[in-house]
Image (cartoon, rainbow, N blue to C red; front, side, top):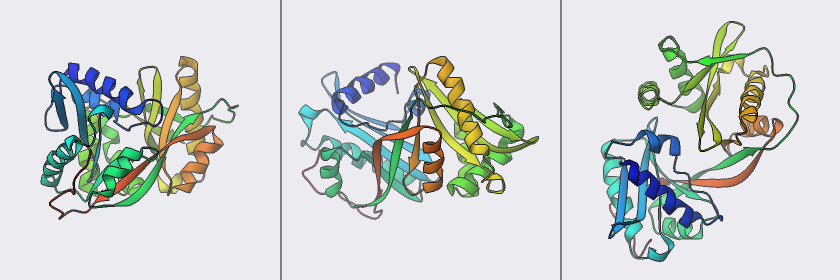
Length: 281
């Protein structure tokens, strides 16, 4: 991907969203892909980008998310982008291929209705709302080092359901993309991790995990409060994502002042299907 294409993707995203829904394009990952090929698929009319789709590899699962300019829909453009992306995704032999769509996007629902897929899970995008924060001492955060590698891999296995080799591969990808992970230290032990990405005046929380043996001790709540306070001082709005099937995490985030404002739906592509019905986007 070229720097110029990042600008084109951002401009197209604004046109497609128009304030009615939010596309999940994983901008921290997109920015790390400048100069790389094979992860992004484009459709131009002349020199104008009117269709884009990206694939994202998350520990044995591959996610697809994209868009087409409203004036160019129902011409088969997105269908072609998806077909190309599926060829690449299937070669990686993932456990699952997931198609991501904003819950409020009617055009996305129409597209998915013609695709061999089934609904899998909903994910809430949450934003922190001003609330009083107390009782956040007793844990510390520091940047992870190579010495933390084994612990970080085990956290992805225990907390996110990765297989061991998937977690190891994901760890290497995060390091290669230079995405900063912080480890959580409690009573002189590393007991968890969290990633905080700052971009365009916003802060996003990712990969937040506490080792099972240390859950239920209030550690996660203290960590969240520390992250919030630091970002609040910088004037950054704070966001995160949580699956609807994780009520414990949802309750934790709400107790710290996070409120849901968008929903993303994920659909599992039924592998073995060789065609997509038409007409589509």
